[in-house]
Amino acid sequence: MSVPKLMITLTRLNGKSFTLNALYIETVEAFPDTTILLTNGRRYVVKETVDEVNARSLSFFQKVTLLNLHQEGGSTS
Image 1 (cartoon, rainbow, N blue to C red):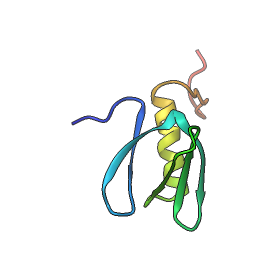
Image 2: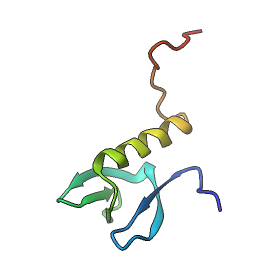
Image 3: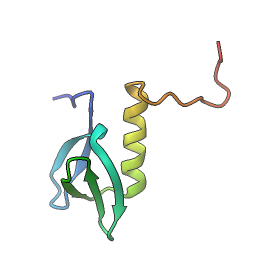
Image 4: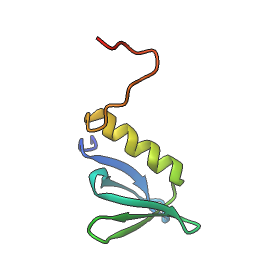
């Protein structure tokens, strides 16, 4: 089964994977467990670190071209 395009895969503390729509992430903090707050007020606590969630979110935004970061050494034409 493939993950929908607007989702990132994360792991709950009980070990079960789930997908989350990265567009709705408002904040990602460590309390000490990584806690994700969505724009609708829902909170998710996950096994991944803050850096891992940020990296997956960044990768998602680059894949769907919502965030077009200039890559060093890349072509400008």
